[in-house]
Image (cartoon, rainbow, N blue to C red; front, side, top):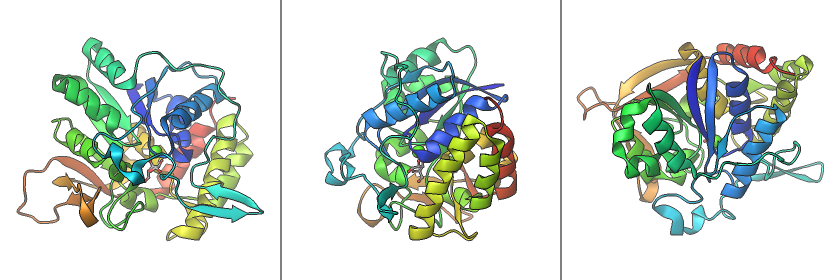
Length: 323
Ligand code: BDR
Ligand code: CA
């Protein structure tokens, strides 16, 4: 099994990603780090602990950064403002990410070490380079890399759910994770690590439909039933605000990044490109991929497409494991 460290801002699709990683026999989750993004750090940490506890897994959770690296003073990065759209269904407000996940409150506890410090400790001791899978804003990794840029030698690759070439969600030019902390994303790109972007172009193509959810429900494990609930809620939001090519379907972004580690062929049209991050104005948080042939030095892998069938088949198989 491949050892990974997961970095999350749980989050409905983060929750599916965590369950997929924990249950997959091909992955060994060494630790999970929380970060502020979808919700404030208290909520993303609590939600992460809830998911770990829900599966009865023995994985340490480290609390990460509560604010973005540079944009922490910005009004639109304050936790109360990063709320997202809301839909009223049967008199109840539905969001893409509920404040707290609808599973029992966490009785397990987070570790004492802050996430960036954990990264340094872990990587310093690591005998072999490890894969990092970051599916929230990249603040924790940026801080760790700032404290000790040399740890990059112990990083096999960084799989990042984030960015978008033709598809965006936070603004007209930006995807949420990169938009929330653009400077952190640039620092990760500049670190020298191998970076693989799993952007919206891929996650929107490899979407999960209502009938896929019905099948997850039938499987009847804790993970499959909870995933079905989470994804059905995401479908409501997609239908209302960003319908996909396939009707009644949702992107489950973060889980696709985890599945890539298990089976790379779940992403399609993965190209080595030059990407720079926009910091301000209209292009704030944009992943500016250079489409030209003559271009600045290429610095990352970027997935332009995803394999929906393969992704759903993997979720079916993996979420069926466990109780
Ligand atoms: C990303 O933003 C978050 O809202 C999701 O959890 C995902 O990581 C998609 O843009
Ligand atoms: Ca996320």
